[in-house]
Length: 191
Image 1: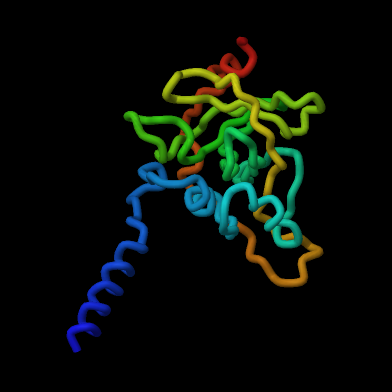
Image 2: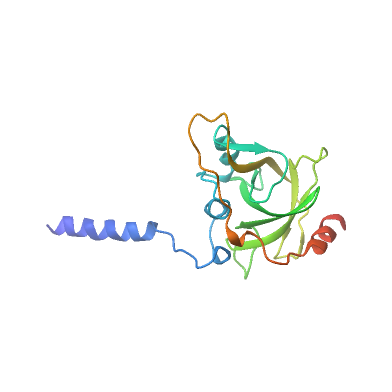
């Protein structure tokens, strides 16, 4: 009896610890990029960010052109051993867009926070978004690192998919009402 009571208490504690605390707003989120991208984009893929591109094959449409609400899947690299996922919030011009994502910059000394309308610059030789630079809020500048990316997952069911996938619905808070387009262009092109 004593052992089953102790087990029940431990089970209840473990269950409560596994339930994530829900933020009032998408932008109040603090945590990893994957659950944030899933909530912000509506794309129902699970697992490490570097696995999203392959998991989307046969489920969601994929491509090399940005669309609002699409998820950019960063590849696994030395700097990103688990990859990264970010949701397109604005398309500024052919090689500059804004993303809303989590767990990138250090805000108030800590990673994990959500960031809205962050500049992303395509630096790939072919203009196919396979190599990007990302703005860092903690340094107020476009990073010097170049990150490899697979491409965009659009959230629309792949017509060749054998099973039904519901279209994804991006969150309403994906972009601000007045994003800084000019600042984004200056950040990208003023080296």
